[in-house]
Image 1 (cartoon, one colour):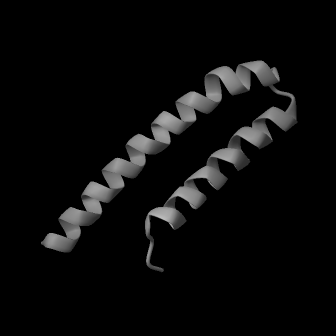
Image 2 (image 1 turned 60 degrees about the horizontal axis):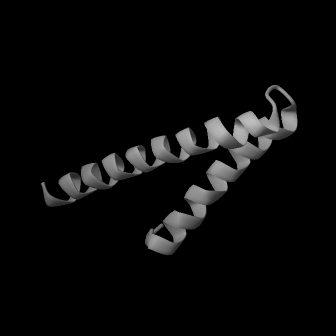
Amino acid sequence: MALDLTKTAVIFAALIAVGVGGLAASGVMATGTVLMMVLPSTVVFGLICLALGVQYGEYRAAN
């Protein structure tokens, strides 16, 4: 599957939404805690992993 910016952004947002939505719906933590602490840290971690994955893909494609 060829990924472009739009597909990557949609998949990224869907993964974050499913994870945060499931945690908020489960009642393990207060919704405010999930939205104020878990959501931003999940987005930052996801962006770091995405950047590392893109760089690794570029390295593999070049070599």
